[in-house]
Length: 418
Image (cartoon, rainbow, N blue to C red; front, side, top):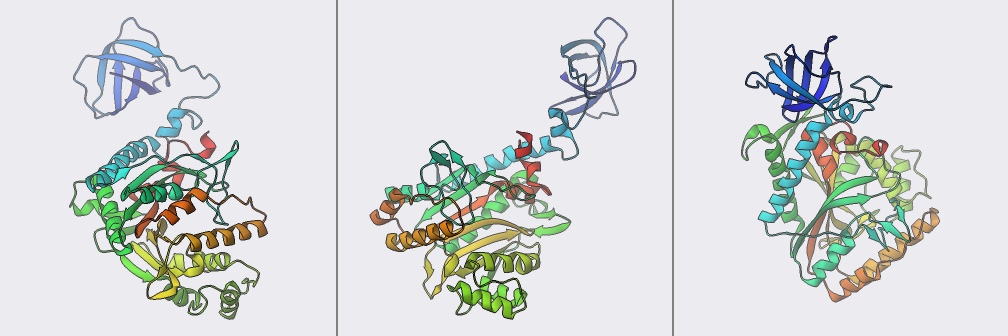
């Protein structure tokens, strides 16, 4: 076997050696050979059949020092060592193996449904215009905040079922659930509906959970524990109207206030939320009500939150039965916001109007005012089919499936590691 010595006795003959498959206690037979210490990478010729049980141990007749541990300033293992970072308290090495399985499972899921995986550019002229998102400069361009514009251009070109699985970038986002460089899974179905997209999203989560925790159909792979709570992926996901949730948990009615920021703030103050200022943007007032009062009440069970006010429509179309609401849903599970989905807006003039409004909001907030993606607008004028699309945070999904408390536990390198 070959591996790294993770612990060594005082005489250097009693070792604990780790390789890709696990750890093994090894005793070096008397004889010629280099002395070993913790941190060394070694090759061992074992005298007995290897037993993966570290307590059973094995004896090595011959051994070779392949790479010495040369850090004399820090004892091995230490948290600053790469080995300690991967095999320390968070067991990141195990998470990275599970991450690889999950990536393969996602691709198998979409490949089996006839989707085409596409690569979107990472450096773009026109990043997202949402006022709350900060794009990261890269020379004369910007790192992509979402592949949405480019994927919809492919819809216009005739690709009807497409997905992208790659890195996106948003400045200033680092927290237990946020990274400034993260993996986004985004997919679009031409001629699809939000109802069908919800069912497909449920199926995806069950498929990936089964790939990590058991065979498809095994209940144990579908009932998880996250942050001390049970998350049942087997049952149909609940669907909640965003207005009903806001009124129930924050005491604020959306009816008649789906567009007006001042009216929403007035109702919030009337409900006792004294911080609500008439000068706040609609999204700022709504977000604080939502995060402070609604999100904590959602519980652990997976659910879709639907029919957002039209002021928060972004790139989604109005609901057919109520133009003051948008065809938009968000997915929550285990208290984590996992995904954001739209019944896609196909009206170029309306999309252009919304972009100009967002540019004005960015200007008022002192943020960079990015150019409008004219090629995306041209694609809307060319025409895209009625479509449903969704963006899902892959790293957050792994947090849920692996019961990780910090998003850094499920990625190879967090910002503080590079």
